[in-house]
Amino acid sequence: MKAALLLVLTVWLNVQYGGCAFSSSCSLPPSKWCSSLDSAIQCGVLKQCLLSNFTRSHQTADQVEVGLYYESLCPGCRLFLTQMLLPTWVLLEEIMSVTLVPYGNAQEKNVGGKYVFECQHGEQECLGNTIETCLLNMTDASAAYETIHCMESADDVISAAKSCVDLFSPELKWESIDSCVNGDKGNQLMHQNALKTQALNPPHKYVPWITVNGAHTDDLQDKASTSLFSLVCSMYKGPKPAACGGSQRGFRSYSNNE
Image (cartoon, rainbow, N blue to C red; front, side, top):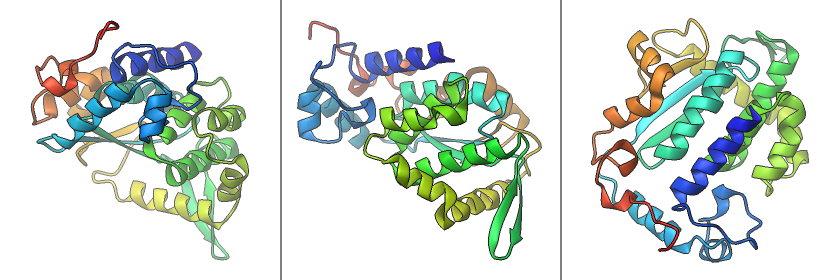
């Protein structure tokens, strides 16, 4: 799992920033490199950030929307999330959006106005689901995905949470995450995940449960599980990016000597 995380970060650096070495003075996680002009200059990726912004502003088709309904301690969910979904998003984020809904086969009941959850893999999974839900609500998508990937790649998802937050979402204090997880906010966010999962049509039968552009079929599930990259490339209706074998100029990579 740790090797997978290193692979994803390596791919991100080479695809997003053209294979060029970023500045050693950069103390920001990758999701923040293009957050401002100063950060792009500090991290030595100004040219690549400008190219990425130009490409995004000239998209001519809707992104392919991939939804994952999952459980934080489900082995199959962890495998798909860390080795298929997020690596594909790293490569194709210009044409692909991701929605993560940590809940899966959990059950909820209202006890005295507060929701109590019972998770398939026990209380620790409920805790992991809530941590990841709070992350998705409290920081931007890129930072949340990086942090969740870090957690799900670790040997112990829960024990890794704080260090992953410190590494990939440094603007968040762990105390604020803990407050969300153990307070009304986290409880209500998990209830919303329950409602989203219960609203699936057709109803989910297992996890991971994958939707593409809001739809789920056995064929889409099989294709996404086998090669999500190929599926997203084939379903995107705009000019294909270079990663998909297209010639869209905005996606060309920069060599080290450019």
